[in-house]
Length: 291
Image (tube, rainbow, N blue to C red):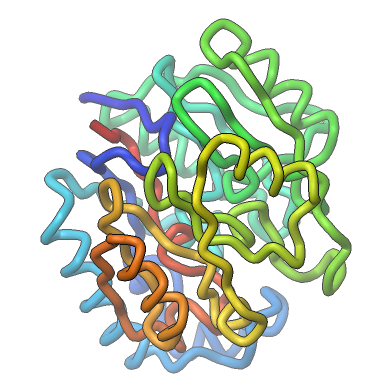
């Protein structure tokens, strides 16, 4: 089993996803639980399945090995967003305790499954540490940016730094804004998606000046997302390989800018699958190995 995902843009060789039938379960389950998970209305289960079919087919077309996280009674609706429970490094997986209380059962379920397919554990964020995968963005294989916000705290970042100190040269801590408050899902990956080593989709309004300047100084071209498309997850873009990316349909301005920058763009309808739960294509996927 090959593993190593210290990149946001290299070609995905293996990926972990979770089918909505194993996370959302049924329309009745969604009706009962969507409010406590802070969803934007109740997803239509049949529409979710239709949207996921398209999303899944694109993944199948461009990723060689697909692994499915199984149903687990200790997890809830948000377990469909496989990206958040861990990061896969060249030395193994680092598991996160999750800043959102309702997601506390997910890391152990993910750990049990990944170990069963041959991915070793490098470590876990423990004690008072909080962290979610959506706050960890690889700028390159030796440089990682971590969002410090409501889902990731200083103790979590301290422990992560210790775990990666032997193979990561630079850890950049990016202070996230209060924005809509602690109940909203704001990760660093909400405001930046790397599409290539020198290309990123960003929502600069929520980005600290030092970090934006840093990206520009690194020679990274920034594709700016406007307010309307940010709200519809326009800055949440998954790189399947350099400049070959997947995004939520309904963000035409961002899509046009990506194409003009030389990117190939694939889309899926995701109003019920992604928008209502505030989780785009990066959230729905955990790359296990990038070539």
